[in-house]
Image (tube, rainbow, N blue to C red):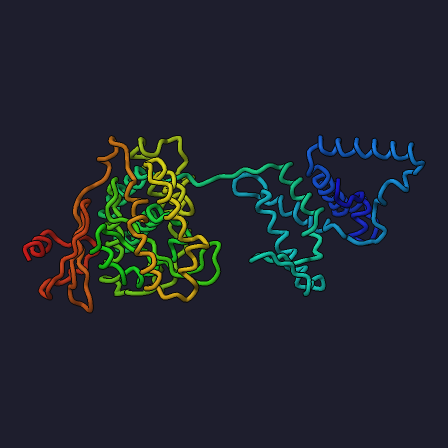
Length: 475
């Protein structure tokens, strides 16, 4: 085995400091849990490995006894443990098995990746008490290994967890990936619902959802990262990015990201124009117009509630499912009826779909790596905690052409080219109550026109009227 072994009765006595009462259901259940944990620890190795080790032990012992006259007490290590204590962490193993009986997301019990959290809190509690060691720290380069006497960090418990994994197996369910075709169909459905919306709140929810999907899909972002978008940062580089060639929208994210420490700024450019005409500018411009012109907000979180608090990704999940169901009902060639729309999620569908889309459209590998590398340790050197956003922007701006190539190459099949609209979008930008500029967006790009003060805002969240648009074009 290679790990300590004691019988069920000994483990019970080690934990309870008494003999079991077989008339007590709890004692009987605890003995059953101990037996299960013992078997999991024993069979963390393949049966052939166990049998091979046993056969070799018997052969070596017999040959040594014949040749040397040594008896078993001299040729075999002492097994068992004379002290009445739980030295292997059986109490933690029992708690782990008990936790595994809770209902999981995909199966009727918690899987090994979920039950391992029991080990985390147990070790934290152990090291917070008398078991903490202060002077046993081993270093190698940048890595540090801290010595601990916690039994749940020992070999026996590690074998036990491996045995649980081998016995129960693991069922993993990944989010279904978005495609350009799905995003364009979602745009068509949301555009119809947006125009027929009963009020501003419903329109804003639709705008926010589409912004979320497009930013995640074109920016190669995880769902929880999209919520870190700063409205003030987005506005800071809005006109500069749209006046550049090629045109893009700079997403400014601020927060603590996976695999990093401290608060950081990250600037992620997404293209205005893609080969599949993804409506990035249309939905993001509408959302900016609502925040700046209608709500008078110029800073704070982009995705925020009425009190300015950052909205969680879970707020938009039911909306996504609802709109995807509409896509499935009306465009079965996009999402077949055999596909469960609940398999899509804002958590990873956009990011996984972006990688697949980029690979399918033969986006160069170095472009895909560059787009995802902004979270890596190497590029994190240019985004240390506290570094001003403008400095991060200047560092990223040099790589904009390469980063834009990631989503600009997204294509859709020829038969689906007609599933999205190509109408122009005109939105007025107001500064201190006065018209400042007009953003005119179409599949061919975005044009920013400076305005005088004679044009007044209507206060509507929809695109400006045809008369106002014609007046602006004449100007």
